[in-house]
Image (tube, rainbow, N blue to C red; front, side, top):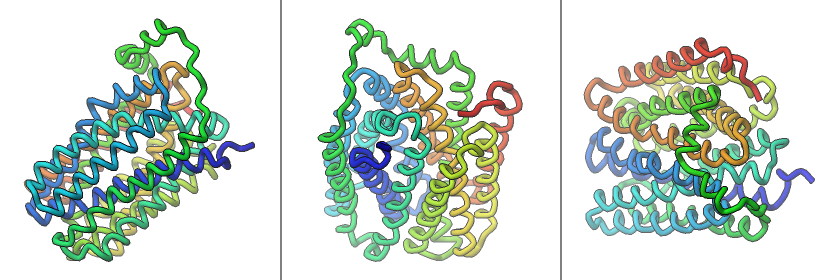
Length: 400
């Protein structure tokens, strides 16, 4: 039986999907709330970056845990913790009790939770789907993520007419509670393979060993370097609520439309990838997709229309989703079984550099302006990818 069609995989993708949707709703609500409270993209960037910067420290440890212990146990425990953390955020915002500093503290906890959860979750995809169906499994996972994320912000925007409407913030823990329900159903159904290694072998699964292993293989090393360029994607994200508010005069409803446009493009990307995987599963497509994505950023900077801006963000979502998923697939297939968890943990650590991008992008948006910040991001993305592609014959021929 195709494992993709099983109830086990369905529960896993729904658990991940509602978790991802909860993060998107959090970004939408909290980013706009902070912008309205402070009128500063710098502070929007700082608050939004808090979980990501925490994950920089915790994801490598999460990867090590995913190699040593039960991945489904780690996944379920982290999902349950997320509900309590997002409920705390909703409560302090609703009662306005030292809301901003306590939200930052909760976001630190969310970063720790995510650092444990994601390496386990990404490896569970391979554990359930197997290598044969890995592209389809990852694409289906992203399809569900983006479907739920596309629906989230517009539905929330219907009720979020003012930052005084704080009951809407309870949608965050509610969505994560749905994720826990499906994570529990997955936990019951999935029969995890027993780790038959001796205890002394387990103890050798150190973080430093994972770093050394990743550095030793040139293609893994380059893929992690390219993953780190998500920092430049992060530069642009604190600017989107400012674009909606000040450039397009579209308010929170416009911000929801812009976020959903990007998610809609990603949905189309998740459908396209498995249909044309022989074209995309190689290093050339990584460089091509990031170049096209960078061009859409320039279009966004020049646009003064919410329709055009939505089109550019939709195209950007399409190319960025394929770029991101191809890198994940290659990093899932290149390492051996004993190192895969730590490689994915390192991958997720590098992904969190987008948080640093949030901070830098917010500060640049307040100082040099929106458009120069976007131009810096797009040109840097293209330059780094071309340098890696041209300088490494091994990477140029990489495919899976």
